[in-house]
Image (cartoon, rainbow, N blue to C red; front, side):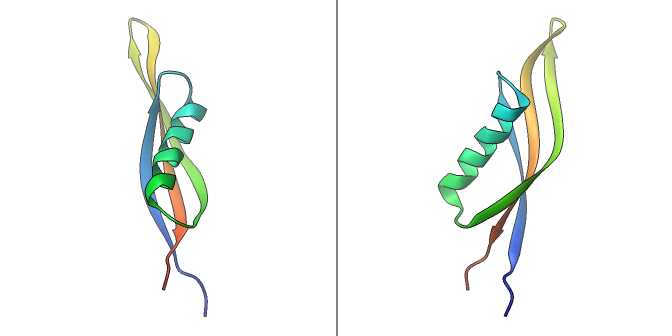
Length: 68
C-alpha cells in the first residue's frame, strides 16, 4: 500500500532575505507537523517602504506523509 502525502501552503516572512523567509515558514511547520518530506517554492514577493525592501515573503508548498 502506498503512502499518502498532504501538501499545505505557507508564507514565511523575514526582514533579511527570501531564503530566511522560507526557513522561517519551514521552522514553524516543523514544530507542528511530522514527516515533512519536501517543499516547493511557489513565489517570492516583498513589501517596499521608501524605495527599499522592508519585508521579504516566500510562499511554499510543504508536503508531509500522513500517518495511518
